[in-house]
Structure formats: C-alpha cells, structure tokens
Amino acid sequence: MIAFIGTRLFNAFATLVAAVIATFIMIRIAPGDPVLVLLGDLATPDQIAAGRIQYGLDRPIYEQLLIYVGKAFTLDFGNSVIQGRPAIDIVAQRMLATLTLGAVTFALVIAVAVPLGLAAALWRDRWFDRATSSTSLVVLGIPDFWLGLVFILIFARWLQILPSSGWSSPSAIVLPAITLALPLIAVNMRLMRNEAIGVLNANMVKILRAKGVPTGRIVSHHVLRNALLPVLTVGGVQFGHLLGGAVIVETVFGWPGLGRELITAISYRDYAVVQTCIFVMTFLVVAVNFAVDFGYRLVDPRLRRS
Amino acid sequence: MTATTLPSPKAMLRLAPTEMLALAFVALFVVVGVAGPYLVDFNPAATDTAARLKPPFTTLANGSIAWLGTDAVGRDVARQVIYGARVSLVVGFTSAAVATAFGIVIGVWAGWAGRRTEQFLMRIVDIQLAFPSILIAVFLAAFIQPSLLSVILILAVTRWAVVARVARAITARTLAKSYVEAAIISGESTWRIVRDCILPNLWIPLLILMSAELSLIILAEASLGFLGLGTPIDVPSWGRIIASGRNYLANAWWIATLPGLVIVIVVVSIGVAGEVLRRRLGRGVSAAL
Image 1 (cartoon, rainbow over the protein chains, first blue to last red):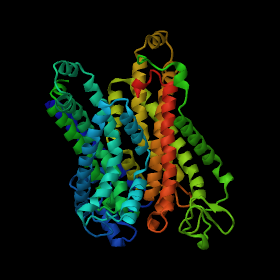
Image 2 (image 1 turned 180 degrees about the vertical axis):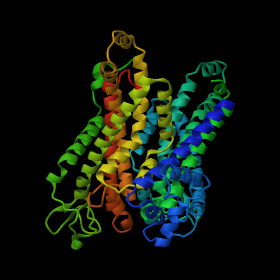
Image 3 (image 1 turned 60 degrees about the vertical axis):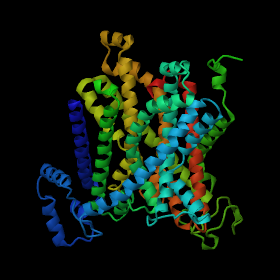
Image 4 (image 1 turned 120 degrees about the vertical axis):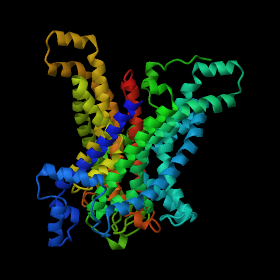
C-alpha cells in the first residue's frame, strides 16, 4: 500500500512538472520575445529589463527552466498584465466558481445516471433500454457549446424562467450544470447499465433469488452497491473532463470560473494568468485522480492485494 | 419461440433504415466537404446589409432562397455551413490520420520494445489520457497562432494516446503468437516482422477506432472555432458560425442553432456508421478496443 501511494505520488508530481515544462516550452514557441509574451505588448523598457532579470532570461536555457519550475511550485506566476495583481490571486478566486459548478454537476450526473442505468439493466433489451441507448448516442454527438446556446434560447429567452448568465442568483447554476451534466449522464448511464447487468448475472444474485429475497432488496442491497463502485471511480476520472467541459460551458454562460478566465486571458494574451490556469487545472486533475485511485483501494479491499 | 441465437451472417450485413440514413448523411458530408465551394457561390467577405438577419426560407433580393436564414451582415447561413463542411472534413480526416499514424508508431514501438521503454511510453499515454482532450487543445492553442495546419496538429496531439494504447495492446498480443516466434527464429528483420505480422492485425481495429476519433475531432474543431481558437477568420467553420450567432439569439435564433443541428447530424451519423463498420469488420476485435 505504501509503495502504491509512493508510486502514485511520484506520478502525480511528475505530471505536474511535465505540465510546467510544457508551458515553458510553449512560451518559447509562441511568437515574439518571451519577455514580451509574459509582460504583454504594453510593457515599458524598464519593465522589460526587470522582467528579463526576474525570469532569468539572461541566463543559460537550463537555468531558466529551473528558475521557471521553482517559481511555478511557489505559485509565483507574476502579475496579470490586464488586472495588475498577482495571477494566482485571480485564479484562486475563479477556482471556487468552477468547483461549485463541478460539484453540482457531479451530483446531478449520479442522481440521474444511476437510476436510469439501473432501470436499463433491469429492462435489458426492452424498449426502455433501447431508447436510453440511442438517446445517449445522440447526446454524445451534441456539441456542448451549442447545447448551452439552445438552452439559453429556450429557457432564458423564450420561456424566461431561468437566467442565461452570471452567478448572482442560485438558479443561474441550473443551465450550465445541466449542459455540463448531459454528456456525462449519457456515459455513466451506459456504464451503470453494463455494471448492473454484470452483477445481475452473477451467481450471488441467482442464489439470492433462489432464497426468495425480493427483487427490490436484491437491487438495493446487492446490485446497486456492487455496480456503483466502478461508476463512482469513473466519476472521479471524469472530473478532468468536467474541467474541459467547463472551459466551454463557462464561456457560454458567463460563469466566472477557471475555464472562462482561461479563455479571456488567452484572448488578451495575458500569459501570466494563462499559465496559472494551466497549472491549477493540471493540479486539480492530478489531485482528483490520485484521490480516486487511493479512495478506490480503501473502499474495495480486493484491490489492495493486487 | 426461438432461442436467442446470433443473427445469421446475412442479417449482420443488412442495414437498418436509420443506418442507411446515417451512411447517406456521411456520404453527403464528404461530398459537400470536397465539392461544396464548387456547388454554391459564396464569398465570406461579401456583406449585404439589406438582407441581414432574415429568417429561414426568406427569398433574397437576388432571387435565391436563404434556407437557413441570413446572419448579422446578410450572408446566407446555409452557404456558410456548406463552406464550413470543408474545414470540418479536412481537419477531421487529416487530424485522425496523423493521430493514428503517430499512435501506431508509439504503440508498436512500446509493444515491441517492452520493459522500460514500454513502461515509459505508456506512462506518457496514461498521463495524457488523464486530461480531457479539449483542455489540451485549448492549452496548446493559447500559445500558437491559429492556422489550418496548427488546428490539425493540435487536435492530432490530443488524440494519439488512445491509438497508441490500442496499438500497444494488439502488438503485445500478436508477439505472443507462434508465427511471430517462428519469424524471429528464422531470422527475419524487425521491420519485416512489424510489417508482415503486426501491422496486418492493426488495420481493422484502428479503422474502427478512427471512426470514433473522427467524430470527436469534428466536435473539438467546432469547439475551438466557437472559442475563437480555431481556424483563422477568413476560413468559415461551423464553430465560428455558431459563435457569430451568439449575440443574436434574441432576434435571430437560426444563426446559432441551425448550423449546430448540422454538426449533431454529422457526428451522430459518423457514430452510427462506425457501429456498422464495427459489426461488419470487427468480429473478434472488439475486445481490443
């Protein structure tokens, strides 16, 4: 177990370092002088000279890389050229909005996908199973940004029952969360269905049936518990995909989270904020994957031995 | 009452009506993508303020009918969609091809080399697969000047890892076969073994995988276009058209919604076509995917 945690921790750390090195390389590939890229076109000659020393651009390239990685891990990404305050402060603020949206979406996904998947498994190959299966195929073909716009059109413009953007009222989270949740519901429902079918076919369930245990009890006590675990794990892995979806959904709904901040910063060429967003998002993905790996082993004793 | 049996080979080849429809849409998409600019006359730079924000089915001053309406500067949305099909098609196919080629090289290399090399390469694959591809695409696009080529390469970078994983699995499995052992014993060169023993086992699974990649890349291209990180402004793309209709949702809903429907139809059709492909070719390979 300790060896396992050690390897995973090392992997997590290596991923984070790789991401930082990748941004370092990308800034040098980006058109223009790295100092201008980092400080923006409006930098004065004094700022440029100071920046050159601050980022160590007068030193050999490997030293530059070391300084850069060191700064990244002390969360020093410099100031936002647009807002004039430390990029990490801006991004930390945005993180809360994204995590709120993520938590609501995740709850929605589990609440909808689990019962639907279970129902599809129980009515396997009947109309309900077929209908949910083809619906999920279509849902996965829908671009999320377009779905968001269609929701805004229907619920905010035509019916006028939900706000289209911002996060001033609690109801503002409804449309972005549903937009973000739908494709994940489609995926998890299929997963839940397949897991539940696997359990339903197991000898354990046959014995329970033979003993005369009511179907409802078999489902709630045995099928659900066994099938839920893989779904929750994948749910953790999907957190990363939630962040990816958030980039688009937050932009559509004006949700003040990491994703929208990233896109805004890219459009202003505010590279301090861009790098911070990339670092924080990478950290979140890595941290959640680590937590899921670890938690899974804690919950399912069978895995501790392998 | 008949017992549940596998459908007969003939039944496996028969296409359901929805599948025929899906294949027809894929064919239409390819034809329009290739020949679109020759079929309709459209100048992305031309504007016509008299014809702006006209709803679908409006007859324009020059006698043509705007089936999908017109946008904020009076351009026909349907013609933009037809032009945009080319970007989706070109980016979709080239990106999928580049990703597949690169994935095969890395996957076969890892499977062949084994040990440390395999561990190292597969670790990279795992790390990349932990990240959603759209996030990687946005990260890369943040630093690169957008062009058709950069979009193709960025999307290829986001998709190669899945291919590498499948290619490695198949390579490792094939290497355990006795005919590979026989080839090694008889002193065949590495290249010949890879070419004659391993690659023939890869084509069908990877073709099926590529059809799935194609849908994902078309969606990702549209997303990048929507975010303004896709192809340059002078190249009309589906994502960009939808983005341009965002500010006109209240008074011209068709600009943002109708092109999106086209994306949904194309992507779902490719998905269904992929299923057909899997059923026809994929017997015995589904385990690898």
